[in-house]
Length: 383
Ligand SMILES: *Cc1c(COP(=O)(O)O)cnc(C)c1O
Image (cartoon, rainbow, N blue to C red; front, side, top):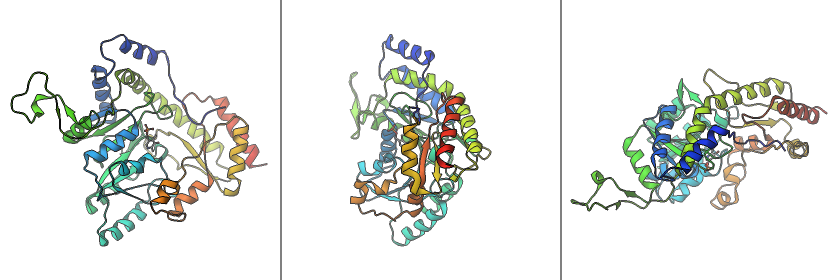
């Protein structure tokens, strides 16, 4: 079966991890700091904090911004559930903004309308999690202007978008947001097995996030509450978690990061082939690329005839093509239905989902495999 996504690991990655295994520090060591510095440099952010996974990154960013039980977090219904769950960990309420059918990202017009309503009802969100679906950045300039007008903070969920650019700058530079969250799960653009990161321009926020991921503890005497600290002292200042990444993983992350531009170039080349090879079929395709580099994480098509989606999915799987669907709208999950959401609440998201299929896309997908996928799809769709 050709999977829809997979990691690309080579001897350089393996050697980097082996070197850490032979060193003194398996965790909380210098390789973590190196990975953080190199990630921050790669995305042009002042600070990067790496951690256990992308979900932890979203949780940490929301906690550091003080999200709590009386607050609202808004996000896109077409995302992985983690984009919404991060609010629930902190007892906050979740609401969604429907998508733009073209980009599959949050619709900025729907957002403005919803913000104006929320303003009159005094229930404006504290945080908007802007998901860069498939790696295509949201319209950050417009979102940034709305965040200033309505007073909410933007967290970018860039789990799909490491390596993408917006307005000439890398996603993660936080030009229009307070923080950007990344995931290094094996299907994402680089991997550390499990792993994630938050990048930010705000030193205080980075510090809070770093503490949050390590029990709320600081070992820095300059931060101590106590006047005269014993040499063995550490202080817990807040309730944190153990969300740490290991140095073994950080070594893999550094090695992977060096290969990111090559991974992105291969993903783009494969997407270019899909876009032209599928153009004449009864499908809605992802948006054409603009001027900026897009680090396509997934390639999702939509059948015009949604009635055929299930049969098509099964036929592709039977042919050895590991198609998937990204995503079941979050508000249709039983957990969110119990929290008061209904079928029909976000028609744009539901219409997208009805026809959606994700085709394989990863750097080591061969031209032959891609040809086979395109031909199989054409055979089924144009039969
Ligand atoms: C993968 C993903 C996450 C969560 O990342 P993990 O590292 O798996 O916890 C969050 N948001 C989106 C959009 C994702 O695709």
